[in-house]
Image 1 (tube, helix red, strand yellow):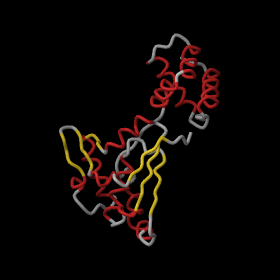
Image 2 (cartoon, one colour):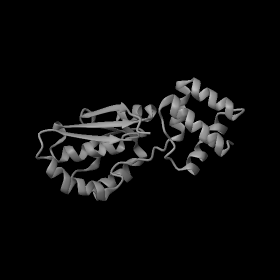
Image 3 (cartoon, one colour):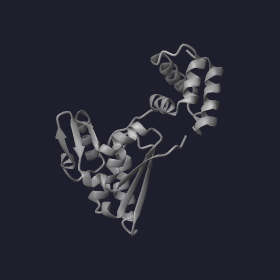
Length: 197
């Protein structure tokens, strides 16, 4: 396990080397995640871990993937999406072009939720959805438009609570343990790595 002073040194060196500033994160949560990473990767010392993180950019990106939180689901806050559907989208319909940025898009469930809302409002074709995250691995997953079939029941319930108008299953095709979303939804998305940290 690493000491508090070591964590501060790690954060300082990461900030200087890569430009990632994790100092605004909850210290307790960050310490747990760094300790878990330290143990999982069998480092012999803090110095060993820090040296490898600073010298190997690929290993650093693996570190970022391990310590960042990727919590998401489709129509996660149904009340929020209902408000978007009823109050915001009618106003956006008056614009000739719509750009929406999903910062910290994780594996893409929320950006696909937005695409569904826009499609139902007849606005998807005049929209571009920018989906960014600092974690390249989750972005690659998001680009596929494939999500676990086991989450579709919860996603469908969230969709209906958000004022959904169709059968949720019309937006995806189930294949074994996965649900592949309609490619027309993803055609209006641009995925990119972006460091908000």
